[in-house]
Length: 183
Length: 183
DNA sequence: ATTAGTAACTAGTTTGTCTAACTATTATTT
DNA sequence: AAATAATAGTTAGACAAACTAGTTACTAAT
Image (cartoon, rainbow over all chains, first blue to last red; front, side, top):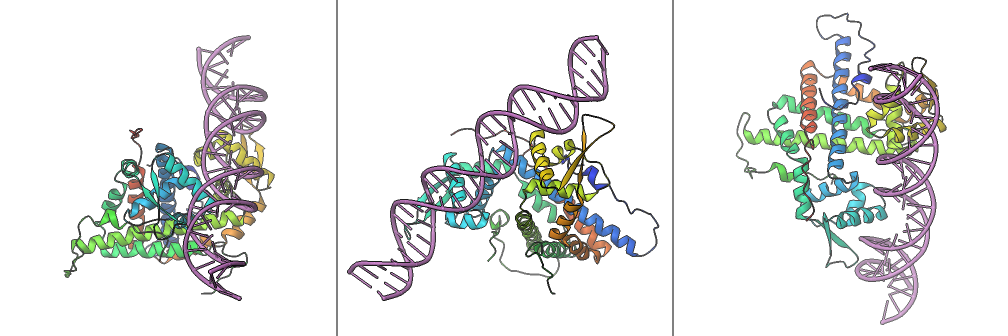
């Protein structure tokens, strides 16, 4: 049981549990399984959100600052410019500037200039940022890797296919008011 | 080019991409598959975040207001009280009150009193909230359901197990807070 | 009957975003 | 070559949404 207080209540409202069970793969079985899968997805999402909040709190930092740090730390060899972060975060350039100001003030990033274009600058995460993020996110990534490394090819394929279908399902939301997409 | 970068760093601890491939399930295959799975998960997450932003924009409503509506609509027979929403959102009671104020002003919820305890109230989503969320989220849920309904029992089991392990992996983050202090 | 505890709300403050205007630099046009 | 447009990032001011602290109304415990 997770300590993600979220929805244990809201979730258990499985109204349609007339347990007329049957042998084989009946429609009702399938519906049941589908529900379980989506339920598991929702629980994962909730866990993720809660994790993010804990991390943010423990580093006393906003969501977007953390995202920027993680983005920078992902590949510290690349030269990242503010505009790239602006596109990544989907914010205004002004907000990006403000975020970078805060991160610079707190000693998590430094700005340096781009010799090739003197309008623009480069952003680097400091060693301290590396250390802090490592410390806080700990070995979450390692744990995740450990949790998938033992999967069989079939299982992996099933999971990947599932996630892709979910991404597609979610991508079609609110693109337009009268969106009836054709297949 | 995705704008979601890959974390090639943490994973490639050993540079074993010498493709000495083999028949069967070699360690390098497994590492590859694991990477693909986590990558798929990250893409899904990004899709979800983007969807949420679109939805929020299109309903001109904050993230938390939307979360409240979805929570309420999940099971409209239940009587939900503000305190529950406070715990669900992980905010202060004051913020919850403010959110409910906004939702009430915009006609998406109503407050009614709890006859059993006159300190507390019940929150209901209005028909209009139902309609709007339905319209905006469209048939995302239907699409999601359609995307899982054809899975075999094995596939479902694999996916559910995967998601549970991921939830566990993520639940262990930042419980300890021995922070790194000032430089 | 008094005291403590709980549920929700109010007031005032802080934080983080936005838009719009601005500086500095580079690219394009004439 | 000079003028004009475009681009990168910053600054200023406004507003929305979160927080803390304190209040009101009620319930539970002694």
